[in-house]
Picture 1: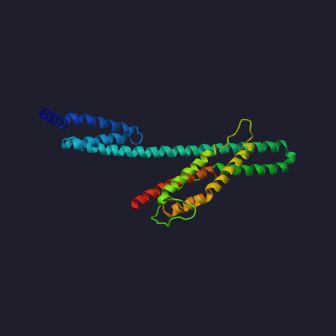
Picture 2: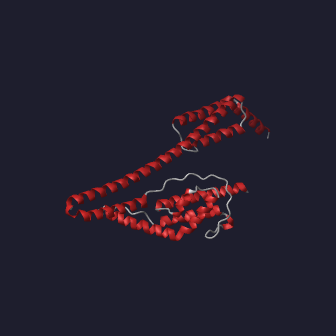
Picture 3: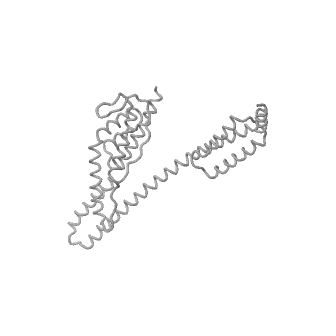
Length: 286
């Protein structure tokens, strides 16, 4: 037993010496310097930060070593904050790029339709009145297609400590957990969208007008089925979440008319987020 005690005491004296801590501090400082210029993925700095805190908590050291470790901890916290902000910025830029690409695709379709109409007007000038009516019909089809495919604008998080009455009518919440009921409803909507398959795409040799007509029919069927299956229950749930202070009031307008499948998906995301916030709020109030 005595040799083990002596070995442990010798090890502690060695770990307390600067010959152990200085290399560790140099390694951590190297990570900080590298990550300052090359922002890491979120949580990477947390791993190093955890190791530093373990060393500080378990090993004895001189006051100077503690001061250096404290500076390194602050640097790692700063780097982790930059990593989180950078990750959010990258995600936002990717979403903006996706929206821009979709807009350019819609613009190409519109330009193609305009070119087709202009060419028809040049070739069949004698039947200009008939072509005018066709032009109006094509424009109506194009407006309907854009309505079916353009996603709705985003929503800001709701604020306000409101305490609502429990909803009645169309909602069923196990053990009164309406946050869980909201999240379950959102999952059902996501499953519904997945079951409808992917939106139509332009087939080889298909004209732009035929593609738009076929797309509008598909979107119309999906929207009709959604309204029959979810319309009233979603409106009730969104109204309750708004009254609970976990959803923006504008989500209520989207619940009344999601417009298209992109609006339905956005509405489901809002309901899921609202249910999560409501569960957290209920836990805080207990």
